[in-house]
Image (cartoon, rainbow, N blue to C red; front, side, top):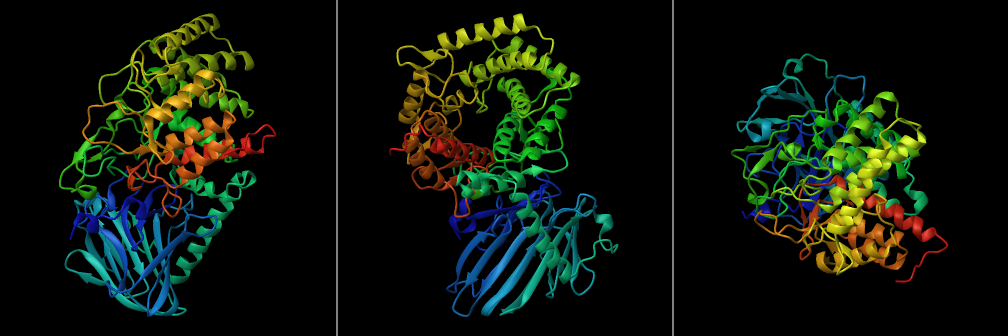
Length: 612
């Protein structure tokens, strides 16, 4: 069997989640990725990164070579996946979801799989192959009664309930074959727990429980979705992006992980494989903006609080990313024995970027607080002391090189985007001090802000071409420059910005509205794909500068980078359209929301130029 058959395209997967962890479900009906008990835990189903030993939970229509057609969708206003399989003999529909979590319950995450017979008869094969700790542990599987089994290994356990008889196989797995008839329902529940609770009767499950929980989950998603105000903008398709961000939220802390996966490659078969199951500080600012713009104030403020809390009030201890629970130690480790997606090794856990200097982190927290203030709040005494220390830290370090927004793997440089965000820390700090009537070293901050702006204009701006560049005294461009107007460093319609946008489209364009983040050699082998978020940044630049027709065109083409469910990866191969990198990628969905809101607002403006 070829790698193409053993590893499905990334775009074949759908996301389900419960704001603690997530799973990826393939079109073929297989759960191929799920980490427990939370996003950055070890995988219990990891076929995504090792086709043979990673583990999975699959539902397969028989015969496998039959003429089966598969379609899927999310139920309206939810992340409950409905997959329809139909063929010559009949049709079934599979509902996949995590159960809605009760915050007062000690029960862990539960995956629900409910199968309905819709027409005729369909023979199905169910395989449950748990493999804990990224495939390293083949669990001890025990039968407790006719419908209840458990899988235990190390400190992990799954309670497995199905209303069809499961056969225990010698290869540490459970299987069942059954025929679905019209009107029948078959239910499967996979509940994470601790080994000592297995078999103690505390996890009671029945068919009625599963049916009720599934409906409660559907109702819960729809209730949450009602607050999302994208319908007012006429762009209800972006609701999926809002739900993805909600699903990537770790409810106990408010953190939003960048993606639910690790080591999905930016270059197929290559080594550009990273772990994104953590919360980045800059994403807090982007997330807060996106959530607030669509009416999700609670989520916006929860991530802001998480970042402030995780930094522990000490600017010198600020990291660029944290674990979902606020953990600081995220040392990168290469896992032995895993093949990697399509052979792309190594598979990594942890992220070495946690130790990098990324100067924009200071400015993003100040920007986050500024937006929060503009929504009617003000920092208290403790928060102001922390913010002041962040601004002082930015003042001290703004002359130093850093690794930048893209976590440059080479030597640190003077990246223009980082400098501008440092500038914004000083500028917003001065505004906050004035509007909140707070004491601050305004003379020193003003002097540093003005000197930094002069430095950016002299060393980060190419006078000959009239454009901003990636780093001081270098000619290359960077798609992160598209963010300069969002930071209010330069106006959307400033001639310098307009020329920079044109140059980025020309030099970083990948065709079809797609952009590379940069084209400069970064020292890593392989050519990465086009970055999805950059296309949406471009949309906002065009729309807010008044070029609505062009913005709409780029927007529509950027939407084609999503899979059939509206899920975006980190990157896309501009030649084949294949999704690349960790999936689904929070930053891509954040940028989608921002572009949606910008385009809608600008199209409604009486001064909009809607010409194509």
